[in-house]
Length: 64
Image 1 (cartoon, rainbow, N blue to C red):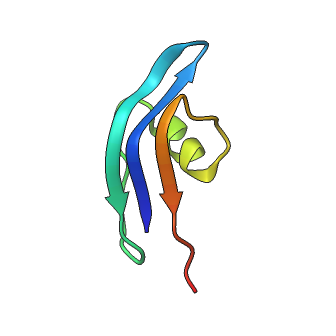
Image 2 (image 1 turned 90 degrees about the vertical axis):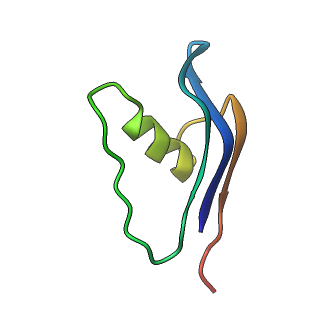
């Protein structure tokens, strides 16, 4: 399970993602769609921990 709670990610103090909340269930198939520049890659990079969050929380539960 991946949980996003009020996630905000900024580049040079300009929010790219602003207060995103939601969850992706373990074993489910999900798609992230949107136009260029809408934050898809930023969302995935923040979930993977490659980008620092400006606010909020990302929780990734690993399978046992």
